Amino acid sequence: MIQQFYPQTPHTYRFELNKDMHLSAAHFIPHDDAGNCQYMHGHTYFINITIAGDELDEMGFLIDFKVIKNLIHKKYDHTVLNDHPEFKQKNPTTEQVAETIWSTIQQKLNTLSNQPKCIQVVVRETPTSYVVYRPKAEDLL
Ligand SMILES: [Zn+2]
Image 1 (cartoon, rainbow, N blue to C red):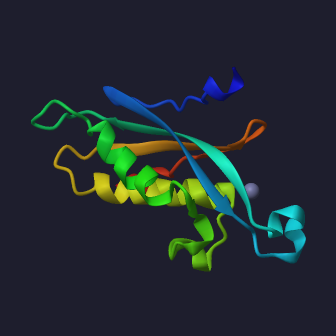
Image 2: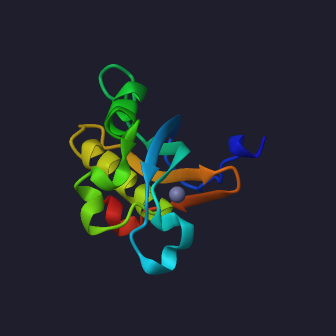
């Protein structure tokens, strides 16, 4: 099934983990040019998060899978994305949802001693549409 295919991102880290999740959320794009997307509607978003690094923590994790799930799924599942403060200034388009997920995760990773990096976020909004967000090298310093 096409939803199980993910684009790969090349890197030279020793470890790479991927966390899949899906969440139900509503959104709308408040812009005259957004067509039907101006009106509130819902999606089941399929999300894939790729985290890489060379070092593990004292438990042997790059990062605990449930930490990632709690950061994203708990926050957005069964919510209206437009209600979140981060989507007041920027619209919850698939692109900006992917970028926001990346920055939320990377901010958390920056607090960890083993310094893992979020190198890719895939957000699938519909069976036929998805966005890939990849940070620039300077975003990961
Ligand atoms: Zn939509």
